[in-house]
Image (cartoon, rainbow over all chains, first blue to last red):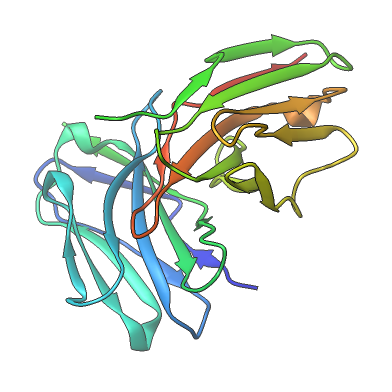
Length: 114
Length: 112
């Protein structure tokens, strides 16, 4: 069964620090990859997605992610975080050719200190 | 920007009572999903519809949960009877081919 692993449960950073959140998946076939963000009290919002092509994907709010197929990874990065980036971040995958079901990781809570 | 509508936003119910949640997906999105998100965890798929048909309900506890999408548009998720362990956020999402999902704001259920 496919799974998505987010190894960091809680990350605490100061403003202006650089961010990298890890995401690994366990499936040898073709995948579509996503990062979602959930701000306190709000719904899940799509940050970025990877379907094919350039493995470096740029999303909203200055976030980017790099798909490294050999490492089964899709890590999320931001060069300089802001207090407003405090939220929970979820990595998710869809297996191409499947029923297009999103499988989520357990999430990483990011706290940015002002 | 088009949204997935869900109601109610919050629901408190007593154990053993029935509860229902409603979802209206983005117009034209044939695929609709119900997810359950327990506090501190990622969302888990309960049921997936393609138009009015169930594609996957393998993770739906069918002894107490039911879901329908009779006309292939809006959908209802029901729990009867509710149990304490059902307390969670229930998320609805819709999607179209080649796109990611769009999630609704969810219904936060508390069973007391």
